[in-house]
Image (tube, rainbow over all chains, first blue to last red):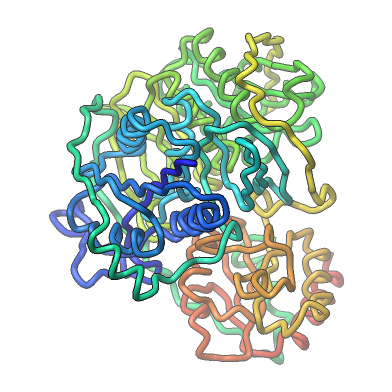
Length: 245
Length: 321
């Protein structure tokens, strides 16, 4: 089985968000980057499937060279090789076009990625890639098994989950608890250094969106503290002051 | 060339977040001097569908083929694409949800349209079509100019303040061509707590963290939720410990919610949890630790024992109903 795992390189969940260049560039200074947490789940499940059933895992990233440490980490966790499309991603459509282009050349059985990136939170790349390749896509997938060329999987739906079965190839957007995150071991880290990381140039895509500016939410007002002995007052305040009841 | 709004149905009625999407789409239609058309897929009465008029829609296309009764993003995207082509729509609107994103993505790829997900405000339409969206899990916004001919907007809860009128929409039946590839997945089983109020739809959420000390202690929280007509949620440690089901987990890697009122009980307020609730209009934090970081993100705070405070709040709600 050939598995493609697409990963994002995103600021750590605790990173402080700020912008430079007149609010048109994200301020990377002092920000720790990580593999997108949802992509990490996708990668972990891919490694488990490979360990159980054999096959190969290719990691794909659309981004610039500063993502290479995260790509190496994915190789250390258990991917066999990696492809980086060397470009600054413009938007979801652009990224999906690059992924679809790579996938068309390699015919993967399974294309996994996180349900969304935690920087732009669109949650649409898997659907775009699926449609561009003319194969089914599903998200958010929280359980996945492969048997005889078929995927048996569970999707989270409003207030519950549904169990589905579909024939490969498929594109799946993943989330917990599909697998436990994996931490690379020393052997993995050593072998990752020599695993192939191929850098390719992007295909051209029509200009769909362009960034005007970034902004931050208005600062939150003071928290109004209510003494515990007057806790009941909260209900009155929610009715008359906040007007949310 | 009307604005087309894809709505989600729940037991034959238009979901609340979809009603907001209709209102949003109708506002955009006003700006572009056109009308708003709704696409509803699945079973619903004509009366329920014509209520789309209350939110500004002129017309509802109803695709009621029995094959479409079960939520299916592949088929729904196919149906939506055909509706967009029939109406010649240039702007497509839907509410942000797992289904909304999937339908938006697949139809956008079919239509060669750009898709902007997580929209938090009405667009600006003079001098280019510009729209604001949430990024970094609600910690920032990006304003983008959308340049493609067809634009698909996936709108977050509370992007607009809905005002109802007394209009009625005209309901037309819509019979798209369905393909085998639309039914590529076989549904084996659906597990759904049908009586539960859904977190993404709820106006009020009462949520519990590790400070609740164990699954057997959830009653006072549920009592308050019931008194308020609220949904119940929880923090990540609570769902990891299996005290509560996974679909109640609110946060960075769980569900993102945007209720009018979010009441956090015994949740310290880790940044990953805050990322899931920062769309809430009003946040109340009840925690016995005055240093809990959640107080910094709250509108109202009570430093106290949840097992003392919660029953008293429930009584206060019931006494003043």
